[in-house]
Length: 484
Image (cartoon, rainbow, N blue to C red; front, side, top):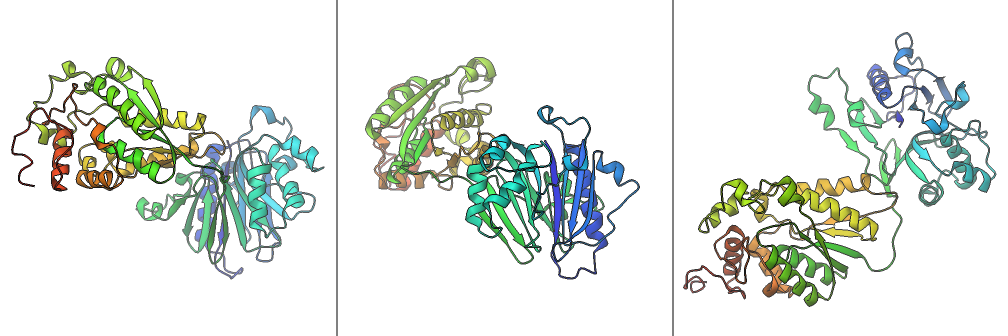
């Protein structure tokens, strides 16, 4: 809704202000106008906490910098480019309505991106006063009332329990003039070290200095502030604190389980770790649907856990174009003797299947208070299926704080992501997972075909562990198990 930007100069000489710092922060603030064109404010502070420069106007920052510039050296600069929401429209703005804000005590200065939904409640609860009706202005007097400027635990409690809404926030305390605090729940925030200063802004591309030919040299120094994080930053170090509220009681894990080897091992692993598990099974029209349906019920019974079943025809009747769900559209089935080809290339690829499965699982997990989603992505199949590669699960995990509501923390766990099939078999045997109940085959029926890609990987995985698989196969050389 707004953008916040600023910087902390890391060297100790106030008399020498790098022209590169001035040039960089000016461009960052102009870039930030992309997220707010209704007003802008800039405040700079010296090395003793005194205000060096204050510019606050109900206009665009890019227009201001056409004829003006920053004129004084500084230790800290904080900026806001405001996008005015309908519910806080002020027809005739004064400088009191323009961020950065402070209180009557003029100790804490803040720039805020987001919405504080309970600003009026806080005003009444703590008998606070502010100079404008804009919600962000409640933060400095709230800090005056509840925080000593030093106790990190106090500040975390304010951010977790008092402020209801969204925020990316910079806090400057004049009594601690050589540090800043950055906090975010889900609003974007990025930091960059360059030219002897630490810069921050609301979006990554705002921090890219366009004067540099090699953009990657700059981008490699940019770091995203993780959602639900508080950073304490001074000249010497950055300290990080978690803003998620701590949950008590047994952790709940939702295991996406096809009835296959990998996901069943993951489910048993989660039980061994002490999680309260539920299995989430999709009926999506795959060729092995009946066999998977039969076996998933037996697996859930064996593990004595809840089974959640979801029926969807989106892949078979809407998306289509998969040998696994619509072989008639894809020129027939892979031949039964092409197991190696199937294992090495995604012949049975179902378009965006894991992305869709994970998205549905995220919604179910949020609504039903699960702490974790567990997926059976593995190292063996990452070479042929892109959504089995660990980077997919990592990126989805990073997306979740921006996809779920406030303080709904759900994490993705991938217990076998770094394991090959033989290692998954060994893990399953070690933890006594019900491998005898699993269904790995692409085909339907009562017995595994033995020759499709999953059957090949499974039987060879058992053989490499010098253990005969406990399930029968339809097509398999009689002497297959003899040379283990």
